[in-house]
Length: 211
Image (cartoon, rainbow, N blue to C red):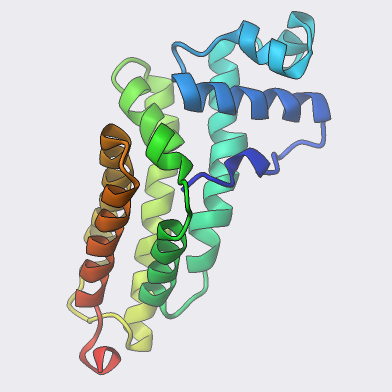
């Protein structure tokens, strides 16, 4: 899901801050937040500790900034934007799954989803991280739920579908596909899981849309 993340545009025009955030994202994605090395981040950027602490008072502040300024905008571009106004959310979600399945060497199979990785690692041990990560996850669910409701109004989605619960399941299932594929390190398993999720989406179609 985050194959494009290293090219994400952060919220600030400060190039030094952006450089740190991108290097920190890569380090956290590879090693997790707790094992992420500030020395490695500085080595990757060629910046000094002074420059780092000018922008971020500590490692935790840097990690939270990665969540809000790298992971969130990347998710917004990849996951939120295609669903924000569409009246055909099932078609949009199928297109997303297809695009992920067609990537020849998905980064998520090797490293997992940055959001899910951090949720699993940090939510049990740090309340600030848990709240921030849960807010991002819930925003994703809300976007899918709103899209499903528009799909119901447009006749693509069955009227009996519970939008909020279904959206939570879809997002959780996608994250599960990524997480278990990381554990197996299997692109085939990743693609197979996406295919099954796509099959589930087909069951949500209204009768006239399924014809």
